[in-house]
Structures are given as structure tokens and as C-alpha cells.
Figure 1 (cartoon, rainbow, N blue to C red):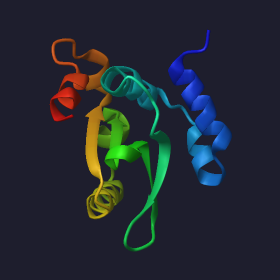
Figure 2 (figure 1 turned 30 degrees about the vertical axis):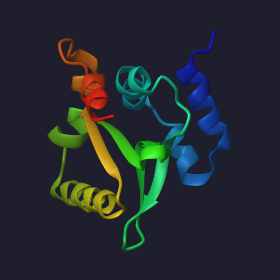
Figure 3 (figure 1 turned 90 degrees about the vertical axis):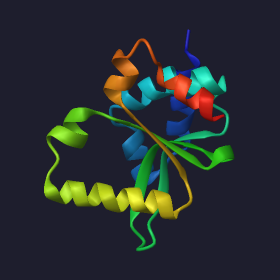
Figure 4 (figure 1 turned 135 degrees about the horizontal axis):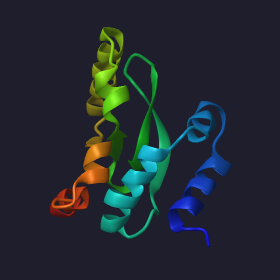
Length: 134
């Protein structure tokens, strides 16, 4: 039986084109964990959500967010330690800061989670943080 998350991802891929489709064809392990552990337990539905949401900076650069929730104009991210911290170069660090500014200047609510937080924390699940906010 196909799960709600699997069906959602399949629908997102079916409606995507170009760079967004390429992003959706990659390993979505962290994004799937984010949907399962933080988003679905709080919102009880994936209606209004989009994966690999494209947004632009004021300079015209295209960026992609793991998960976007249109009703709250919110971006949710799942960042793994190795690609987002341990192996980060100076150039990547600068790029991440530019991207963070684009999110803020775009007026988005920004809710980042670490993969370890979603995968290993048992006492305080990330969904508790979200429930407290909404």
C-alpha cells in the first residue's frame, strides 16, 4: 500500500519540470524524514505543501527549499551535518548566508531542522516545536 508521503512525492514529481524535477529525482531522504517526523504529525495532511520550492533572491538567483507551505508562507528544511557543516567550504558558507537572506527578505517563515534532530531525538520531537507555534 502506498503511503500518503509516497503518493505526495509521486504527485510532486509528476507535476515538476526542469531543475525542480531534477531536484525531486535526487535522494530525498532528509525531506522524507522531515515530512514524517515534523510536518505530518502537526498538520495531519500534506495539502498546501510543495517539495523543492523555487524562490528567487533580489539579485535574481534561483534557490530551492526542501518543503514550502503556502498557507503560512513557510519554508521547512532538513539539513544533514556532513553536507551542511562538516564539509562546508568558505564559498558554500557564503552561498548559504546569501540563501538565508533571500528567505528572510522574501518574507518567508523559516523553520530549519537537522537530520539528527529528526532521526535521533526521542524526548523532544521537532513536531512539539511546531505545535507550540501553530
